[in-house]
Amino acid sequence: MKKYDLLNTLYNKEIESIKSLEAEMEAAKEREDWTAWEAINSQYGVETTQLREEVEAEYSAVPFDGPAKQGIAKFWQKSFGR
Image (tube, rainbow, N blue to C red; front, side):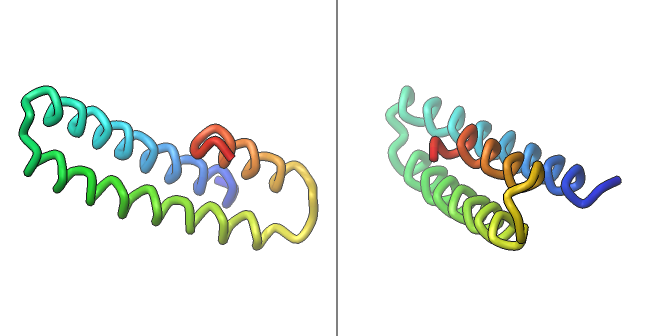
């Protein structure tokens, strides 16, 4: 498996985890369980920050504007709207 494919698989798993946290936050909000919402929101912030840092590091490590860098840029855009 190529490094890019492995990273893509790992990022997709992290995105699924983040989506799960978003659903949990929404459920806590509907229940008006603000203590749970704050705890989930905190974890959400940690996971999204960590993922952004990983993507930035991987993007910076690609030395040219070839397909790999374009793929990472598309992932960034899709995941974070940048």
